[in-house]
Amino acid sequence: MTTTVSVVGSTGSIGTQAIQVLQAAATAEPGRFQLDAIGAFRSVDLLAEQARQMRPRRVALGDPSRARELQERLPQGVELLAGPGSLVEIASGVDVVLNAVVGFAGLPVTVAALSSGVRLALANKESLVAGAPVVQRVRSTPGAEILPVDSEHCAIHQCLRAGRDPSEVAKLVLTASGGPFRGRSEDELASVTCSDALAHPTWDMGPKITVDSSTLMNKGLEVLEAHELFGTPFDQIEVVVHPQSVIHSMVEFVDGAIVAQLSNPDMRLPIGYCLSWPDRLPIAYGAIDWKSLAQLDFEEPRPDTFRCLALAFQAGRMGGIAPAWLNAANEVAVAAFLEGRIAWRQIATVVEDVLSACSSQDATTAEEVIDADGEARSRATAIVAGGRTGVKVASG
Ligand code: MG
Image (cartoon, rainbow, N blue to C red):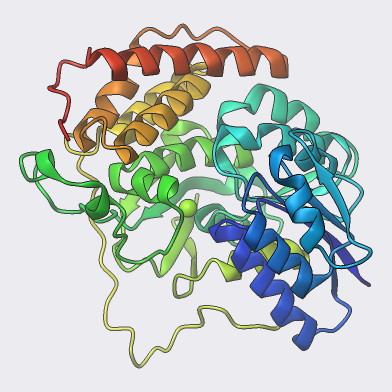
């Protein structure tokens, strides 16, 4: 049976790897998938290239100002949708929607896919974390389900797969690579640069998630994501630093048994898993060579240096709109860091300042979530602009 696929955010790191998986699957299992639609906000060159190679039925471009330019470069018969709503338009009418949009901007895609009752391969954790009150409601639409592309959650999905009773789960153990700054002291981290933060030791990812990984905010968001996906209470979610990124996460059961998923770091494995679920794709991405795997190490994350992790747990326990505030403040702070406007250590300070002003008020509609996001964003923007973080703003 052919599975029809829409890749929203097809030009980013996850999107381009998804295209590679679909190309490999076309050889390994001809007819297994049909790429129905691809879409991106503004990467016209790559979209045109992907359309030429993959011949989807539809292409969506979020930024309408370059629609004419893209139209001229699309192969005959490929339909172009343009404008802010076009990415939402391609998030239904297929078997699987891969949401690979970066950040909170992915929320409408997540909501559209689940409301239309399709399988959502979710690579956009921010939409689930910040939009949880709304996403959880549309998740119960008949036919809708979330398959996590995030490697840790995909690992847990695989560990839980034998249909075990949730009451048998004692703990989820999320592994973290520790990022590029693992083992560094507070003082050493005072002067780290953008390119230091973007040099991830084990994963090759986009800039936003790579910075999140350096602060451990990525792991913090993943704790919230695990809570939403699997319904696990926060005191049953543990984070362990595992620098080799070979164990992608683990589930500990009440009898002490631990089930883990192992593979070399390669996002094409979780992408293929989510696209082909409930079957497995016969392409071995990240298979381990046991003769060359020397050792697996584990250590505790350092809460004083990587404050974002504790802030995420705090927002999760507050509930309501607090995770949306945490996420919005982080997106603003990371963007400011990438533009050289604040120092690395101030990312956590901005998030902490914003979160300290947050009530744990509930949100029930998408508008309320978007309002909460907007409010936290303007507070974070003001803090970044005013340098009201208690830390000297970086110059140059
Ligand atoms: Mg992850």
